[in-house]
Length: 530
Image 1 (cartoon, helix red, strand yellow):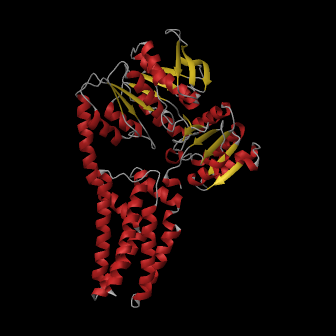
Image 2 (tube, helix red, strand yellow):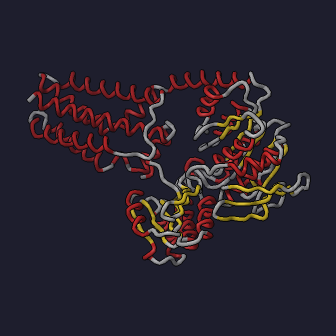
Image 3 (cartoon, helix red, strand yellow):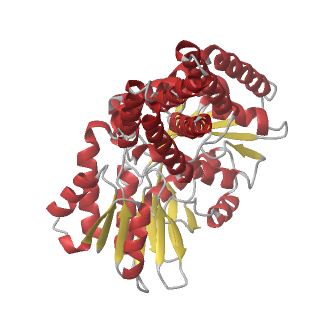
């Protein structure tokens, strides 16, 4: 009997441990912010998921049958074994990264869980058998209430994390102060900032020793880490991508790096669930322009009405645009697309600089717009035009941002799976519509659009119907909205496939492919939106 109870306890400890790891992964995907994690719990229904509800049922059965433990132990053992097996074999698009902070949170949560189990043993045990049974029931309780342990760990570690972050922040600030000649370029925007960062880095690297923030290191902590770990005394330019989900996020980064040049690539309906309104989005993005010194330069995309209407009076401002050139200095004309990329001419509408013809492997108007911003900064920093042209021609497509691949079977893949947005998705659909052969779209739609989520995803459905021959809609999160757009634009039902996962989408897609087809992957939702 004791051996049976020990096995039950171990199975439930494994289930609780795996669930705490999964909760930590979701907390990490929500930037370790309790308010975002709480929102995700509400919207995802994770606290009332079938597996967790079953855990509560088994927990209360185990409590009620405390004096007749054999039957309830069988239930607990089955539940613990199945749950552990399920969680261990689960695959995630963005798995948990065991950073020092993640380790601290998990360690504190685990200690709190163990204290719960030990407390249950002392409170209810009168024999070895009952002690083990009490521990098993408590371990099941930890599984059922695992979110609470995450919240408690984050709260307890607040002063520790604050002290650690301040130490790294001060070190980074000191390093920047020791390099007064370093030119710092900040880049923000609702969309396009990562691509613009890569394009500008490639161009400036032809003329300067340049560093950029890697990957998605676009928060204050990410920028701090970049400075402390990667900045060298010989760097001449530092390009800082600045992300934001709340008012004040951009200012916080600017207060650390004090940029000389700022690029605002877009102001649009992104992260509306946290910002609340497009006005707050605009105010936050322009925190970058507001932070620039009097001798600095703001570079603003006029193709977004909110950005165009927002005046910049504290610093020189050069605006650019392709569709809306009124008041802009730089634009792109004579745009041409082919199967190898694009060609366009950068024109200075003030006539101070000569036309610059450029060739790139990139596709789409949004990519050309991002290149315009990078070229404007490069010319401001006196990079010769021949070096700009060479760098632009050598720029590699940024992975998952409308990059092109061709399969041996003659199928063209347009990969636009990173962080879809209303402007970028429309542009991707237009590119698909200009490609030869059948066009096939695989998409779960767009997220974090607040009250506009349904209508903007319905508009995505409209764009799919206009430009694609077949639509494969993934998941349930935006399904109704996209299908509504497809229907109102007249796309036949037999050309629409509804699937639950990308794995199922692949199994539906593969048999229908033939040489000459083009497949567009538009967005790939993270695990928090499954």
